[in-house]
Length: 285
Length: 164
Ligand SMILES: Cc1cc2nc3c(=O)[nH]c(=O)nc-3n(C[C@H](O)[C@H](O)[C@H](O)COP(=O)(O)OP(=O)(O)OC[C@H]3O[C@@H](n4cnc5c(N)ncnc54)[C@H](O)[C@@H]3O)c2cc1C
Ligand code: FES
Ligand code: FES
Image (cartoon, rainbow over all chains, first blue to last red):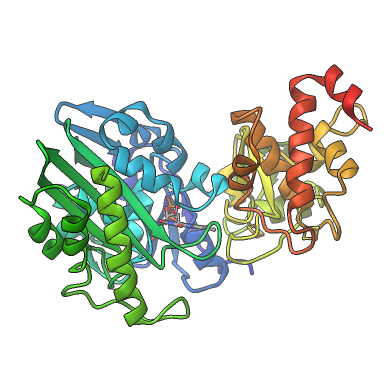
C-alpha cells in the first residue's frame, strides 16, 4: 500500500532538526533508516502528520573513541556498526548481535539509534544496550539529557523519549580484558526476529566467574536484565555446571508474551536453554 | 511538492514528488524502470532491491524524496551495450529462475554481495541473500549462479573455459 499523506522536512542541522520537530507537534514522527517505520506507514499502522527525516545529519553517523567508552551516533547504520574497528575491538557483543539483525539491504539503511528508539521487544539491540549499561543521549529545544538504558525502555514499543526529543548518540562503556561475550538468538527462519534472544558478557578471573551481565530479548514488553542469573553465577568457580545452574533462573520475574511463534511457557523454557548456551559460549567452557 | 533529482541507470530525472511516494513507485511510474517489482508490504521479500549510491536497498522501504541527489542502479542498468551482466548471464545459464518475480532483486543483492566478498562460500551466499525470498526455485540454482558469476567476475578468461 501507499502511505497516507504527510508533510516532510529534511533538516540540514541538528539545531534545525529539534526546532522542526518541536514545531511539528505530537503527531510528527522522526524518520531515521525507515526500516521499521516504512513498513508501518505502508500498512497504515502509523499515519503521522509529518515526518522529520534525519537522513542528511551526517554528524550523527560518527562512531568515536571516548576513553573508557565508545560513543555511537544515533544514525550509524547497522552496516557501519558491523564493520567499525572500535566496535569490533571494544564492543564485540554489539557487533555480534548486529550481525543477526535483518539482512544486508536492511542493514544498509537501518540505524542503531532507530533500533533503540523503536523499542520493539523483539529487537536485538535493546538487550545489548541494557547488558552493556549504555547511556542514551537525547536532545530537544529544551536541552540535552542522558538516559541510562535501564530507564529508556518504558513499555511495548515505547521509549522514554518525549515527542520533541531526538536520540543523538549512545555511550557504551568498553569491556576491558578478560571479558567474553555472546549473543544467542533463536528464530525459525532466516532473516527473522528473535523468539527469544540472550545478550551476555562474562569476565573470568583465575578460574572464577568475576562478573556477569545477561539481558533478554522478547521475554516481556521491554528487554530485561536477568539479575537472578547474574547473582547466581557471580563468584562461582568457572564450570559448565555452575553456569547451567545459574541459567536455570533466566526467566525468573519475567512475563514473556504468547504469540504465533510460541507460548509463554515455551519462551520460559527457551530462556533457560539459550542463557546456558550464551553463558558457556561467552565464558569459553 | 518537493522537487528531486535522481540519477537512474545513468539518466538524470528531475521530478516533483509527493513525499509519501516510495522509491520503487517512482522508479516504475516516473522513470519507466518497470524491471523492479514490488512483492510485499512488509519489507521482507527483497524483490524491489536496487543499489543506491552503490549499496543494496529495498526500494519499497525508501521514500523517493530520500533518493534526492543519489544514484540508483536497477536491474535494467546492468550490462554494457546490450550484453548482459555476468550475474544476469549466470542466472540464465544455471536456470536460477522460474517465474522470475524475485530475480531482479536477487541479482542486485548478489551483485552487492560480490562487491564486499568476491569469492563467497555457499554459506556466505545464502547469508548474503537472506533478505531475498524466492517461492519457486528452492535456491539451489541461485547459489550456483552466484558462484559462477563470482568466478567469472574474478577471472573472465578462465571462467569462460570451464563453462559448458
Ligand atoms: C525485513 C526486516 C527484518 C528485520 N529484522 C530485524 C531483526 O532481526 N532484529 C532487529 O533488531 N531488527 C530487525 N529489523 C528492524 C531494523 O533493525 C530497523 O533498522 C530498526 O528497528 C529501526 O531503525 P531505523 O533506523 O530503520 O528506524 P526508523 O524505521 O526510521 O524509525 C523507527 C522508530 O524510531 C524512531 N526513531 C528513529 N530514530 C530516532 C532518533 N534518532 N530519535 C528519535 N526517534 C527515532 C522513529 O520515529 C520510529 O518511531 C528488521 C527490519 C526489516 C525491514
Ligand atoms: S517489495 Fe518486498 S521488500 Fe520491497
Ligand atoms: S523464481 Fe519465482 S519467486 Fe523466485
